[in-house]
Amino acid sequence: MQIADALRLAIQHLNAGRTAEAAAVCARILEVQPANPVANALAARAARRSGDPARARRHVDAALAAAPDYPPARDLDAQLAADHEPVDVAERAYRRLLTLDPSSWSGWYDYGNLRQVRADDPASSVAPYRRALAVAPAEDRPAMNLATAALKLADTTAALAVCQGVLARQPSHIRANALAVTGLYDLGRAEEADRLVGWGSLIRTYELPLPAGYPDIAAFNRALAAAVRAHPNRRDDWDPTKRAIRGGALVTDVLKHDDPAIQGFARALAVVLDRYVKDLPAPATDPEHPHLRAIPAGYALDAWGNILGEGGHQSGHIHNLGWLSGVYYVEMPPAVQDDDPERAGWIEFNRPGYGIPDTGRATLRTLKPETGVLALFPSYVWHRTVPFTGGGERISIAFDLHPR
Image (cartoon, rainbow, N blue to C red; front, side):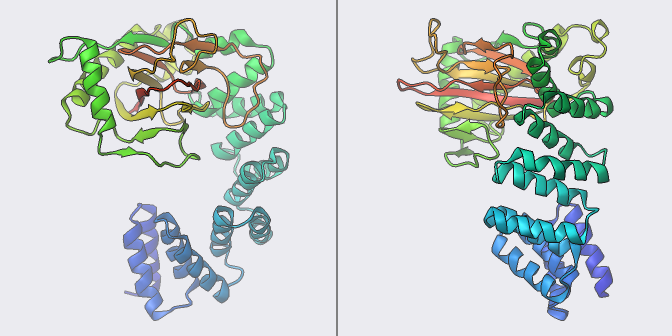
């Protein structure tokens, strides 16, 4: 195989997610041409994707030694610096990249993220995001991060305008709707925001039908709690930058287990989800509503378990990949009480997360979690759990429903 053909094959493997195959092709090329900048850059991409930053760095350095102005290598150099180096080092890397290739929208976007997230300076992220959008006006990611930065800077009118631009193209865009809700509340347009949130019509609670083989829901929940605690996918360590859970343990792919209680829950959950869709207002009653206009004809389900101990909670977040999200309450600690003015362990809606300031203008809603009950809500609705003290565990199963 010629080198050019091998490089094309490596690119095809990377684009298809076949990281190991791409790395193997690059390794064969580099046996023949160790300094090949394209092969080194592709090998660095594969190494970074497989979680080997040291190997990625070696390949990037080799690519830059052979071709200092090769943009893909400069891009990877900046990404690796953003992941592992001090902010000032990463910033210099991005400046080199963007001087070399000012038409790289992804470079401007990543540079904006560096300034907003790692440098905690949303004001200095605005210009890079705007440059990214000038190059690629239809890209959602810089638009959404620009809107987030604007909300952090109290430039609510600008944030809402950016969201409306995205929603004009994608009316059911989850993050654009979430940020728009926050913007509407902040601008005193609570009636519009409340319509999007849909408390009581789109946010609903249901009792789980009792799965077969259990005398009552309490017995079922005891079996389900034991299954969640002992689940083979339980993880007591997780990346807090990728999960809203704070403290406690996480169970990924919780339904992918043959335990009878978990399979009984999956069957009962399907019944409730079908009921929710049937109970929704007819789309014709509000044809422009982003949740109603996106009701899926068929859906797939992602689910995970959350085990929270004292002080554990979920920070404010949304579910970017869902249409409908929800949570089933399996076990509650003693601190969850009806008359608690602090609402310890309760779920709260509409307070923004992701570092967006709470202006106090949103219509906050709280719901006391009760074992045997599901809470369902549009995936763009902000929600969090209030921390609790006093011992015990708060066990729940959360899930996203998204179009198949």
